[in-house]
Length: 224
Length: 264
Image (cartoon, each protein chain N blue to C red):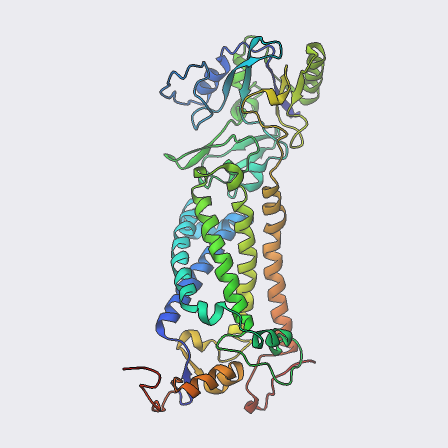
């Protein structure tokens, strides 16, 4: 670890993130294998389309658990928009689309990240509910069950598209940020550029964990 | 092979159920334990080992007379078949030679998507084999120039198998002869079914019949719109990200001399 790096995630967050990410990608892949007959060949990897269906269904359960834990973990930070600062950021598109002198400062997660989180959380819950009904469709009236399929497909449209935005902005679009989900430590310079307000807040509260620096006050803000 | 359809004329049907038995025999389907439910209709509905069923109905006319109404229920073999549209594995398919809807059990993965999609609620799921079952219009017979087993067994001519145009003419003529509320059922739905009825009463009189069946809107929305949109949207996002990368570039801290780019 290099000097001047800041811890931005703990191992619990990273484990939940990757459990959700890997299960979600596996679900997208196996789902594509069933949605398009031209992608039926994906089934060969699992020893046939029937096994692919089983892998899809049970991976869905893993995704469901990790999603619920993620919502519990990130809701306060990423699930609620804070006005007016988030609105200012949205009006400036976060400085991503046109030149902005100074990108409006937001909390730990900017509205773009919040939007992604809410899309995954909202459509993810829809995927879980519709998916479970699709798994046991004979338990409910057919007129209701029929609508689970387009809803499941709608969730896929949204999550699959947003996944690529997330992939781009979390890697080459924002160099250095990917480390937040690998080592958990980010270059403070990058972090200060992307999340200035959060860094200031953490510094003010003495909670910022910087590599190679003694924490100013370990007990600050805590009773013990 | 010319397109053929199966025609059922309920005014000629005596509900002998010879067709029901012939279907079991040709398809080697097991008989199930029956229960006396106070009706000759047995089993009560289609199931994984019953591909066709004669419905028995006590019908009270406007004049207070009680009449038998019979109806043969089986796969209608839609031209625009929702089950084929939704099937993920290609197990449900059009029999190219005949236009009927075949079902390849080796390919069926038991997802039950066809069960919810079918506007006639025909495919039945068997949890024991994790597969779906339905009438395939005796594919093994019709592709060998034989008529379906049910037609072969029919002693009264209530079931006919023949060239579509001829059968439509026969049906229209029979409706004319019967008069009153007699009507055809099937040819006007889902771009024409390959199993159609001549009914002596209005369709809505018949118990458990599907009134104005059509490919469910949910299926069209799902397979016609959202399915292609999923790849289009993802492709659009990927293209957008690439364009963003080569025009705006990544966000980097000021100190690198690479002032955060924007605009041009």
